[in-house]
Image (cartoon, rainbow, N blue to C red; front, side, top):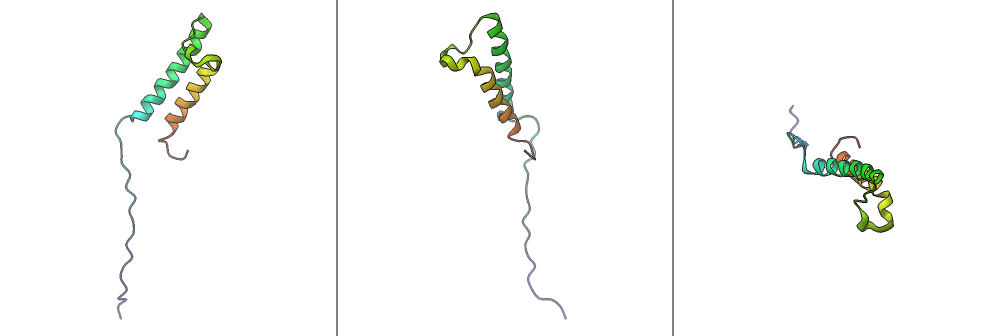
Length: 78
């Protein structure tokens, strides 16, 4: 006697493989680079983020955290 119940369809998970870096990774890297440059220029006496007012003291930290968050967006397990 054969089992005449229909087979269950299983869903396939399709992942899009990307060759290279995505736009989000590039923007994240640029923000981290800007944070490093802003930090170095603050010791030289030049304020690159004067438009931010008193928050400009913390701009390297802010830009660095946003950049690292963008770099970690596409990684698995995070």
